[in-house]
Image (cartoon, rainbow, N blue to C red):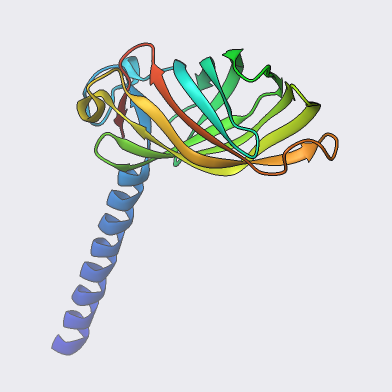
Length: 197
């Protein structure tokens, strides 16, 4: 009888421990972009839209050039694992090499917190038409490409998203269009955005 009671108590203790582990893991994975340095981020302080600006974006490959400005605006979804940003606009201006970049289709950014003030950003979509001296109507898209988002406590600015040599997939255009293009950029937030839960 004692043995059965002890086994029951041990089983209950194990189930409670597992429930606590699952609950704390789920809470730790939730991602929230926040207007203030607060963890967890209260609903009133959760960011609902973001605006990022990049200067000196670089496109690398057999035909390298840069654009002096890139602007990204996105609506921020509900708290999640990850939290999704739906792009509202993406523009490039003042590109070198006789190039222009026009966003044909917008995409999404999935933000998953990995540490205090840090998150992984997975980008999908953003189909872009590129025309440069020597080739035109080249279409590229971002598929499952990863960047890093850091908040102002780490960056010393408003927080930013960094992409380093992210490959763009060619999905259209003539044989003259470069097959391999990589993308370098640092997008700074227009207002302070903290990475919270």
